[in-house]
Length: 363
Image (cartoon, rainbow, N blue to C red; front, side, top):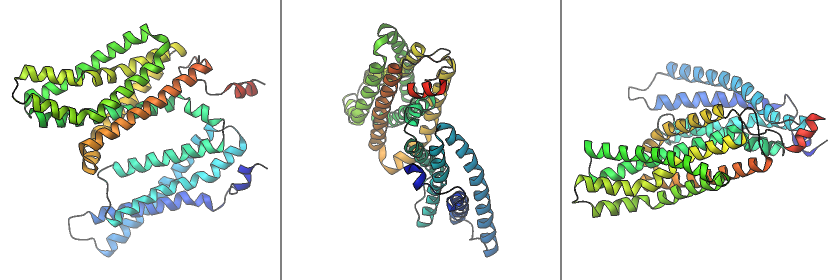
């Protein structure tokens, strides 16, 4: 008997009740928080109990269905039976993170859909750690998958929109808010991204063996500029305060040239890398572009409604810079790992099994 088996709760134990219990609590707390925000007179006792009961039952049902779906997905990531037993036994405890909805009773409330998004992200991270601890062979298979790369590009899209929203606010404060300023800022930003995309294509053809380093360089440059961007924009605005519109346009173009070019260059560099190592890369590239755009859409809301409220503009760009540096390092590691394995898949995805597992499967 392995150490994992000795410390795993037996199937059918109390751990299987954690998900429905978390669902009961989450549904009840969500309804209580919703009722507490009502501006109208407080609900009657009957309405209160009925609302809370319905929320609790709905939460329990949804969590039980989600538990089955999540368990089936998790077990696909592990191959050893002992690791599957460990995941099956410990996975229900990860649902308890949703009981953080009870903090609304203390007055701590995040706006809109931020709370469920944050809890879902934390839930996914807990299950990722669970899988990696259960089976060592899952690490290269999971962290070398297209899904992991898509998650990193989701974060990259979030960072790009944090910069765009924040820099627009700062530029408007420095150069004024009118139709000319709004058009100018958006045009310069999109023009830089487009030219950067062309530049990334040229660099990827000229330096095909340096794609991981090019990608890391782009992310590091954007992150470094993000750290100093707000003081730099304020200083430029003070110098250009009495200048004409063409001079202001030129100053903003020069100021944002480097970061926007680097942002636009990242996707074609990664596409060129995928084209080197995988066949039929279209589906993978479509997935990356989709999740990158999805991250941008999520960030457009989170920046104004959360980051600006909790920490202000400087904190927002620092968070974006941290995302850039993290994504750059992790994607560079991903690309180097796949290059060292000599990935060549006909399905446009990295090889899912290391050499030892492939030999075992062929045997």
